[in-house]
View 1 (cartoon, rainbow, N blue to C red):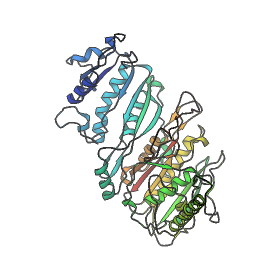
View 2 (cartoon, one colour):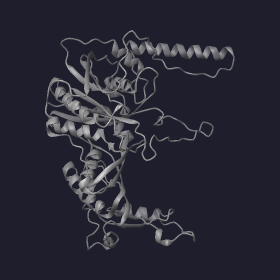
View 3 (tube, rainbow, N blue to C red):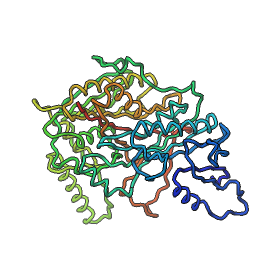
View 4 (cartoon, helix red, strand yellow):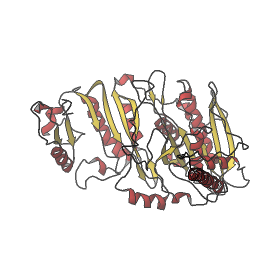
Length: 487
């Protein structure tokens, strides 16, 4: 803000954080820079910025006086930032208690922000008793309910966290994924009477039989391929990346990895495909007779020598041997960025078994390019019906996996389907019957870097972002929510 000649005021309730920020901002000022733009950083409580007894209240006395608000609150009690500071939001362990205190911060932000200006929220999620607590979506919902509209929802991938070692041990010990993402939400202040809460009508949450108008259901029951390893033994984060394939679609590869990670040996799983009947259908599953081209092509530098030809043949033979071992179920390539094609082809050869439980139901996401505005309500209603069905048919501790992708309609409005579908499920069956176990962000390679990529000056290529619409970022990620049946 200082370099751009913008006035900035920073507030934190932790004196240590205030002291660190003040020290970082104590840099020399060039003669061409105005002192008035140096950031003002002070100790205070974001819930009560206008209290008369606080020395900094004069900065926040006038409503509609700020052009932008940046908020990065604690992720509930994910990290306890203090042990004795009264009002520290990281010391509120209960979700409802944390939300109630954050609503005071939201009210203050709405009061100070000018109309049609933006608030940027950085927020992540938490866990309780090995179940997933969607703090981010709960907080975004509170902002929308108070008088904001969500303009952008960006997934920030998180790597090299200090708690990685401990998290690796805990996720294997207690069978959950490590947090490797958080959200950056851009919200805009609007008049409260124009807020669209995006709820469905009450009767849409009731259990009904038959298809939903505009949505066709295709169900296939198969046996879960046995795994040569214990699935939870593979350390995986909450962001999964996928290679692009010329034959198999992104949703199909996502479905394959969901089965590979969350399937259960000696049980069946069900694939539920949703088709928008007024549009072109999603690409169908290939038949069992399709040729196995699970080995991806590998290019080698051809130097015109016999050694180059030998290396190509050797690497090709290694890939073929690997694919055969995967097909026979003797090895596993389960991971955050595995190729998935060998396991996907294995899925197609597995007929259902009799007298075994149904442990998994997977609904792949529909790419948002196929949606129109009138599809959204019917799609959400279809997922509600699948949820009711899954709560009856799944075995105890069985899993329902719902894939979805945010949508920006033809009017430019963002529909956060990840948040909306999660709310629909909770409203339809409640957290007592189906509880959120995992939340996974999936993305194709090309939009997210691989963890092991090593950049050098010789390999560096300047990155460019091409926007379909100049005012908004493209939506390239999807969400997969894993719900566990409790009773």
